[in-house]
Length: 83
View 1 (cartoon, rainbow, N blue to C red):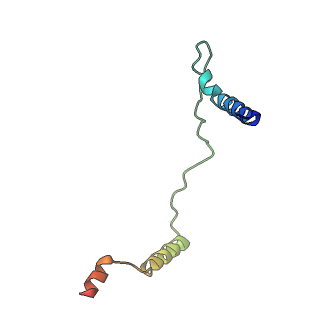
View 2 (view 1 turned 60 degrees about the vertical axis):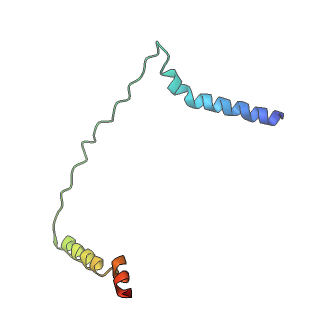
View 3 (view 1 turned 120 degrees about the horizontal axis):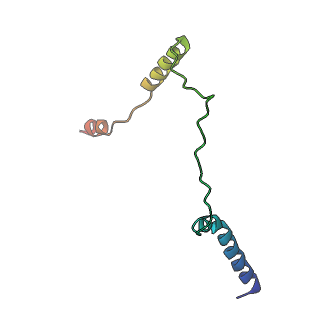
């Protein structure tokens, strides 16, 4: 094994140990675990209710019209047309 390979292996072990250190440190007795609390909900956020106005109605009609104009595929239709 070359020196370069040994150095890479040592670096990989050190990197793995550094990545797992916080998780392993929580299991040691006598170490106080800092509890992670969920952040409080942001009071400045509020629910926006659906406001129906002319523009949203026009948009809804536009979407319905576009959906109605989409091509459809019915696999049974091809089977029936061959007979």
